[in-house]
Length: 108
Image 1: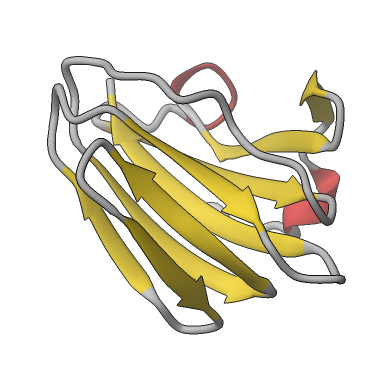
Image 2: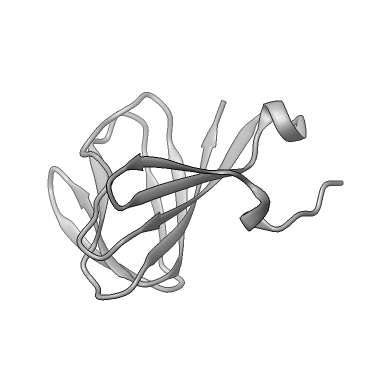
């Protein structure tokens, strides 16, 4: 078992206003199936509108924003959970005046 603080994972600046930390991954932790990441989005910041083959699961820890797909923009806030199927175009945008933090789990 591995227990650690998410702050110990090195942050990477994905784009202006978007920081990602891979808190559990294969290279550092030997996790064979999934990667757990924590994202921090500054007010007004967004992840790119993109698609990929794999699903992912998201849990909003704090802040307010929208989960965007080609069909809708759905408000999200603390304790919202989101399932994004593979091949669905999506992004997340901070619409609040404070940090938007969420956990995102993806398969390898």
